[in-house]
Structures are given as C-alpha cells and as structure tokens.
Image 1: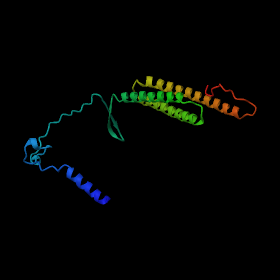
Image 2 (image 1 turned 120 degrees about the horizontal axis):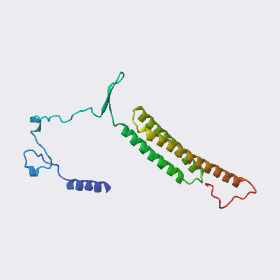
Image 3 (image 1 turned 60 degrees about the vertical axis):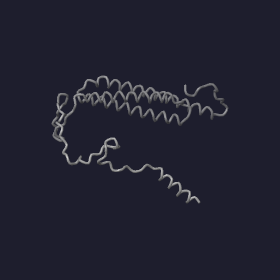
Image 4 (image 1 turned 135 degrees about the vertical axis):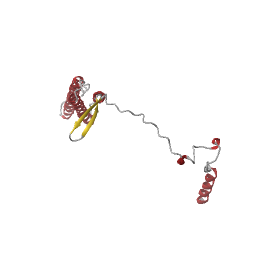
Length: 191
C-alpha cells in the first residue's frame, strides 16, 4: 500500500515540475531567459588597452642576496599599529571577562588563570609589534611599546587579584573543615 502511495506521489511531483528550457537559439530577445549567443566563439574579442600602472613612489626596494629584489610599502607600519590597537582591545576584553568571573569555585579560578595567561601572551604580542615597528624605522614604536608595558602591568594586577581571591577561597574552605570553628556567614570569600 505504501509503495503505491509513494509511486503516486512521485508521479504527481513529476507532473508539477517545471518543464526543461527549450533551446533558445534563433528566438526573439523577449523570449530568452538568459543571454545566449551561438556566434560568440567565432568572433575574436577586442583587447582592452592596459589600465594598470605601477609606480614605486610609496615603496622601498631592497635587494636581498637570498630572496632577490623585495618591494615593501612605506606605509606598512600602519598595519602593525592597527594590529597592536586591536590586540589592546582584545586585552581589555580579556581583563573585563576576568574581573567579571565570580571567583567562588575552583573551575572559575581555573578559567580566570587561563584567561590571565592568554592576556599575557597577547601583551607579549603587542611588544613584538613594537619591536617590528622599531626595526622598520617607524616612529610608532614610541607609543606601541608603552601600550604594551601598560597592558602587561594591567594583566599582572588582575593576576594578583585572582591570586588573592584564590587564597581567600582556600582559607574559607579550610575554615569550614576545621572542627569547632564556625565559619563567618556574611563574609564574601572573594574580597
């Protein structure tokens, strides 16, 4: 019974499907649903004159013995400054996440320590951006390097807050295990 119903459904769907497009060669433009020109391969296309022009006004040409001639843009320092700025935004986001995590459980402490390590790695990356800017003789390293130092100091400060919260949580857990000592009820283990 289900086989007959399945075959009937297939027959009905085939009846309502759109018919295939007829060949459109030698038909009027109004009847054609896509552009088709049967004479397209018989006529050679006209070549356009070259419009691209290469100038080296904003480039530095370096002849290296290993790689040959290398052309650098004079403005490539802007990419590294932008990268350092975006990395600073990442550090700000990581620090705000670390400060927002409630430090009342060991799993949240583990997450906070992991994010702290990631923020140190990102601040080191900003330092490397400053080093590269110094190597390509761009003056932007003078404000990327202090930004890197400020981000490292901020990451260290947040790490110390996490460590204090971890120590306070451990002391609170130990006070609960000590017999005869009642734990303080209103004390927050984070602060």
